[in-house]
Image 1 (tube, rainbow, N blue to C red):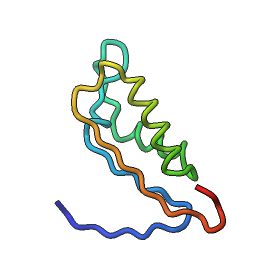
Image 2 (spheres, rainbow, N blue to C red):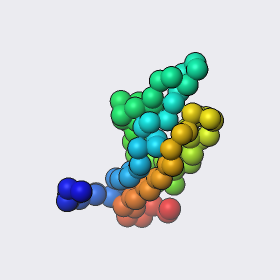
Image 3 (cartoon, rainbow, N blue to C red):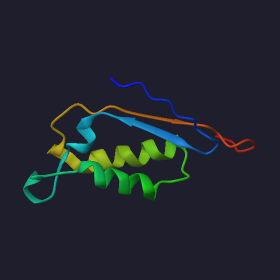
Length: 87
């Protein structure tokens, strides 16, 4: 493990995940991996959404992989609320 520090500002969401997500098999015949680039594109498409919304979208994504999930997958989304917004 390598220690790291990050500062989250109001409205930011931090997503932690295991490799079961990026190593999910996709495509015809389940021969392609979902991969880091696809996850970055997913994250970009969900910028500004709450941690709850990100988790709901990820759950839908994982459900769509069907039998392409070969490994355990763990997800954790943490966020800092924007003052005055209800969560």
